Length: 230
Image (cartoon, rainbow, N blue to C red; front, side, top):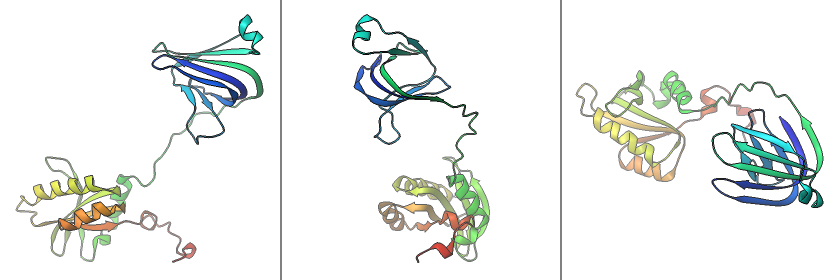
């Protein structure tokens, strides 16, 4: 990756036209061909960019550009379209390159599959006397995350990281189908999530669906009780 801090102006032409007046910015040239222009604000989002695949050509300024103080012209062209990013550099303040190697990629933690696995292993979180029947119980409209047996009959669990109304509606449809099966009925519903929105809780409770807030850290055994204020 090449990182260049330079005083420059930028123009983009193609699907849209955009222009950045001259200022000092960070130019990021990535090994995959992508080029991003950042300012010292705006968090992670670049001011402008060219996504890969793309090619970059560095050329000397023409006479008019030279008279305007331009020392170098970067032309970044998209491979699959006519989009062009042109960077006119007046002064380079810093220019460094680093070989970052192959990135292993982002591994998401706490996704719904993790919650499902942990709750299946700790099915007692549903309450005393519960036992697991199966995960991913099939129905004609999709699999129920967890099907369990409780003291009062079958229990269908829908798991979400953040529980909203759509999740309650999804579980309602599952319950309607499952309760038609004489081998399972009556089937109770549990809407389980790390966070449940107030509107979702209200709708669930109105439909007789129990809500369960899951503590992911506690479930995976990394909750530090000594560091808590409460």
